[in-house]
Length: 356
Image (cartoon, rainbow, N blue to C red; front, side, top):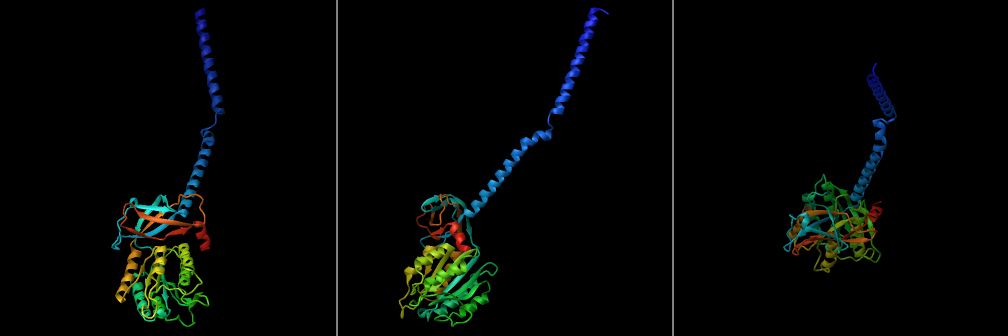
């Protein structure tokens, strides 16, 4: 064999040897290399945990936002007392303690469940008007009440506050309770006394408002409404007007008053007190002159309750406390329009403690 042939043979053997060596090294490396599943474990586990943690935090934020929302129901009228029903969210401005708030949601509503407490003044000043009041109230409930959604209670007050009918959707029971509302309160029977005025007191108007807000409506869902039929005079010092209004704020109750009384034998109507009770809670006071006006007053209350907006916001003020917070709802650039809503609210922490 020539030298050249020998050299070529040796080179061929070296190439084959190197190929087998590389193949063996690659096989060894593959055996030592983690599988795809093993590779993913250190990469995906932290990601999964991180993703799961983010989802939990987002869910917590949504829950906190939902429980922290403040909702305000309001109506808007012009100078002719006509309702404005075509407002858009960008036209509404909400302030809490005079600080602008970011609106979370805004909608017009007409079918909120209604919870009524009708408060009848049965003191001596109502002797000649009480039959008209009872008849007008019965017509109101016959027209407005939706038995599948709304409920109403009937209360009478003089020196005591008596529950004639607890919350019910049965119109016959409401009518029967109105019939039992006699002058100077019913005689002792099955009726439940909710409050008793001071010994030296007389008509317990503010005690009646307080009892309706506290005992009847505080734990109810839906729109909570007190309708007052009275001359507006309070002769009992058990509860002040400030205390009564504060309790309506805590229970988120709106008051509508129909001021009616005997202008000839008594002092007429205390319009100032009734307007204060109503405007503080987002309602309105009416002062009918005759039976037709009385029906019209009930009609306006119905219109008000059916033509409303609801705005919700999450307060951006820090350090949520149990203090009272004022609310203002304004229509941007429209000074000719008036909004009707409650003046404020108490913090969520206090509301929960009240309802427990």
